[in-house]
Length: 153
Image (cartoon, rainbow, N blue to C red; front, side):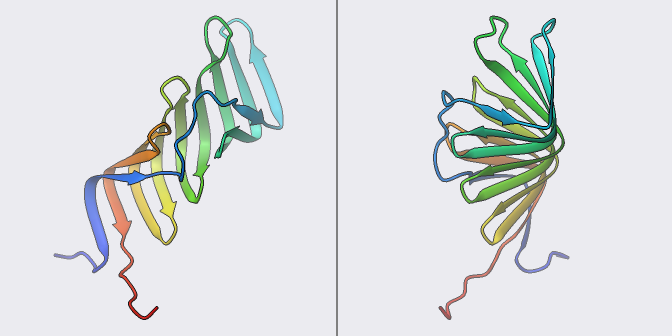
């Protein structure tokens, strides 16, 4: 009662994300306006139009903290803040921040999450993307607008 037709509310929703499974071994390319490296704690801060690219996936944010593995052989995780856009194939998501664990391939988006897939949109508080499986789970006051089928075509 009180819900408009075509509007669904739920506690969680599992969806496909991206059109291919992401290979975590692919190189991570970072472009930005500025870079500050801290050798003491094995981190780097990229600021200004930051774009992270790995395979077909793109993550954009104003600020990204990169935490390197202790032995400096690779990246442990990325922390993107200031408003994040994540694109994989035809799917796109926006959130306040995103944390990407490179070794597990899991990306957690938090804060006013919006997932757009074609004509469908889902909103929620958090979204956990499993890049290896090509799936995502939206949680926390999930809302989606369902488009009714059109038999006229």
